[in-house]
Length: 256
Image (cartoon, rainbow, N blue to C red; front, top):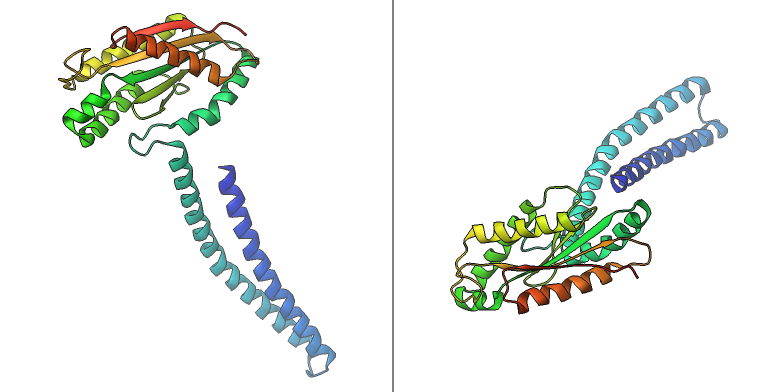
């Protein structure tokens, strides 16, 4: 919104400057004519000249301001499109890793001042390589879209973040979420994925698409980094996969 105000203000000022420039030019020309004593009735001439200058100025402003605002609107649309492309995953439509990297540091800084626990989950689609090989990459892309949509619906608060983190991996960031809340969300994610009943005949975990989850919860302090949470969540995700997939593994992040 701030960017929009700046752009509209700038183009409006530009229109006013252009109109003012015309007015000043006319006044200077009028002064030259008067000094040259080329007119007989100077008073009437001055009045007429000022009137014409004002009309011209108003016409220029009336034409230029809407045109400038149209330019601003198109510029804002282009900026929004670029921002969306940089923060959202093109395939699934959810946030991407760049968004996570840019915002997690600020979130930890904010929570370290306000207090509370932060939960981060890393989620991987089980045997996704086999799924692509069996059903084709188009179906693989559709599977990613469906899972992304299900995970997004699985969180209930506006402050919760669901993002695609890599090819087959997703990340969920849950501010102000303790161990109990983390487990509830993880079980919900496992359940809603199973309920999709996407066939996967090459999975060793089930005959449908399933997910594995690594969960870490910690009391946030200023010395922590997002990388600490993600690294630990990845270790726990790998543990879930090693233990047979289709499950979650949980741990707390020890204070540094």
